[in-house]
Length: 147
Image (cartoon, rainbow, N blue to C red; front, top):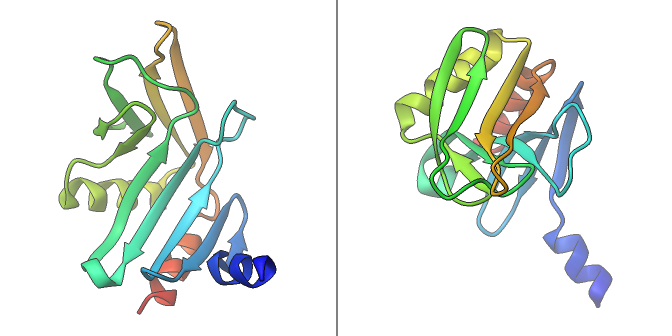
């Protein structure tokens, strides 16, 4: 019985594209490209770009930070020369709006790496760095899986 529940709840792998994976979940249906930071981090940090067809959401960024951030600290995503201020909770961050999601995904397609910068609850600055090789292919594969 537990094996059946786990099989139903487990995401379906669409493909692995270098440092990025593409997956599909049901209930509600969502498809996403996801990656971990280049260097091992504490906790389970990740960056993802998701499509939620039932909510008419496409290309939505979500980042799990490698550590809880300070209460008043901002979170900045950087790709090359581009900088994007993210909306953040204690451990998660998102793009503030659809236009910024689109700009971030476009920058990811042409970038080599992206970094997420903030200040941890203990006052120390931290940076989570992601390689973008395979990101565009994984984002496209995930979007196609949710058509």
